[in-house]
Amino acid sequence: MDQSWRSAILASNSAVPWFSRTLRWKGLYLATAVVNRQSVVSDLDLDDLDSVLGLHIGTVNTLFVTRLEKRLDPMSVTPKQVAILWLVNANPGVKQTDLSRFFQIERPTVHQFVRQLTRNGFMVNEPSKLDRRAGGLWLTDKGREVLASAREAIAQHETELTTSLTAREKSELFRILMKLYLSVPAKG
Image 1 (spheres, rainbow, N blue to C red):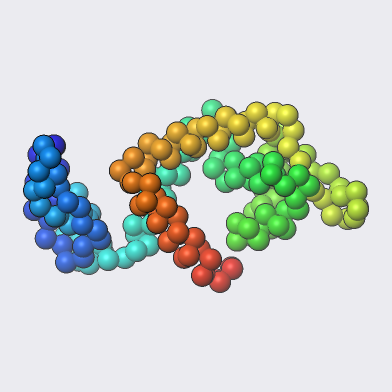
Image 2: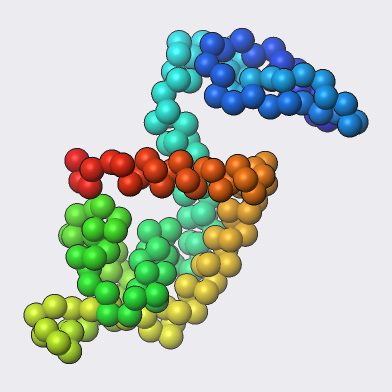
C-alpha cells in the first residue's frame, strides 16, 4: 500500500465525508477513512468548497473530456462529434433537431458540429425523401471507420479512468447521473 496516500487519507479532517473507503493492507482491514479533496491538498483550507457537488462533477468531467480529447485528436474529432457520429450511425437519416433535443443544446450549435463533420467527410446531410424541406444525416464509410476507432479509444479510456470502481459502483454512478440528467428541465 502507498503509505503517503494512506497517511493523507487518514490525516484528513474535512467535515464533508464524500465517501468512506475501508483501507486494507496485506489482507487486514486497517481503518475506514474519509476520501475527499482535503486529503489531496491537506494544507489548503477549502472553506466548505468540498461540499459543492458541481465542483466534483466538473472536475470529473474535465478529467474525462480533456484526456479523451487528446486521444481523439489524431482522428480529427471531439467527444461531442463522436457522440453525434454514434447517434447518426444508430439512426440513419436523423434530423439535427433530434440531436439538439437529445444533447439539450441549441440547434445552431449542433449545426456547427454537423458542418465540421461534413467538411471532414464523416457524414452527409441530405434532404429527406419524404419531406424535401427536412434534412437527414448519414455516415460515410470514412465516418464509420472513425467512429469504430473512436469507440475503441473511448472504451479503453473509460476502463482506465474507472478502474477504482466496482461494477456495482459504476452501475450506481450511471443510475445517479441519469436520474440527475433526466430530472433537470430541458434548456433552463
